[in-house]
Length: 413
Image 1: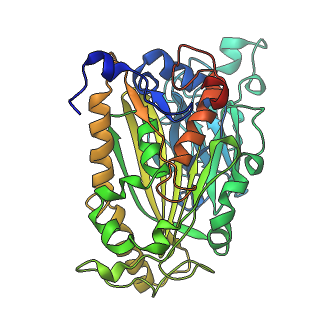
Image 2: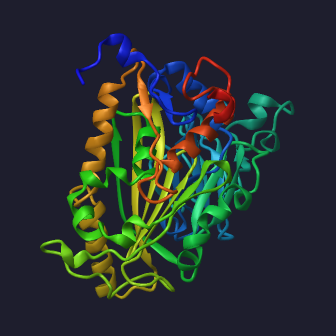
Image 3: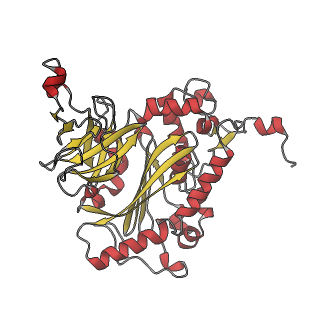
């Protein structure tokens, strides 16, 4: 059949409702702004892991939907989250990505969060404890008790990850994603975890395109390593299971690492209760991923920076109880697959960068296909259909025509 002309190229594919989407949802600036307001400001986001704040007064900063956030461990060992914004003049309080408040900042005191602009100080519970020339400037019209930081919902759960929401009325974290975590929860919570790897990438693509690479395994044809070590009957029998709120997890199978030249079996090391060389994946709406692959856990956290730009933070985890030899093994196993120069990660990033280059803001809208059905098994695109149906509900937009209000796939068809 000859290549298609423009009208044929623009025509809807011969698929059912929910089996394709309009590329405008990846490129339209107005849609992106709505996503920040209607999704990212209303859900739970895993900011980091408790092992990144091992001691009292340790902190880490992040951003959710353009809002600067700081999480800090108090002297009572409780982790709390606040907007990283001084209520005086809207100055960002802490500019470092991480560190400790135990030592004094140049313009402040020890064990205090200090705004360098005018020297206002806050304790680890977010209370304002010092206003420079308070009485002289405000007399009795404003006092420290009126000017605490904006506290945020914060929980530590699912293996010690620190979750934050900008929405005071957000549902409980357990209700939000507990069911999707059941497949890996016991291994993650059997012993304390510890981070051993961190890097980040800023990619010219939409955040949903990165999440797509974690939601579907059909692109394993791109990964030579995965084809060699995994394309067998057990691999193709893996199930994709959809959960409420747009989450998906993928069942396990045994990876044959020794089938790849230069690799050996990784059965020597696993997570508590996890059989050797297993591989589970949990994808959380709107774009977070937990990937437990035998001896190491990988977590991806996305921070959208624009319709065509996303920051992805990659973390690798082992057990806090690891011996030095075990830790070296976990690091090698993790980084040889998912490090910046690992066997798989760079290929995924090249894939989504290519999509981003073809779907820049202002580009012509086109049809993106999610119509593969293989009995909810590994190459079925059920996870993507489930994700975009949930996206449509949150946005009240029809994924196949975002100018129209959301309706179920059957009605859209």
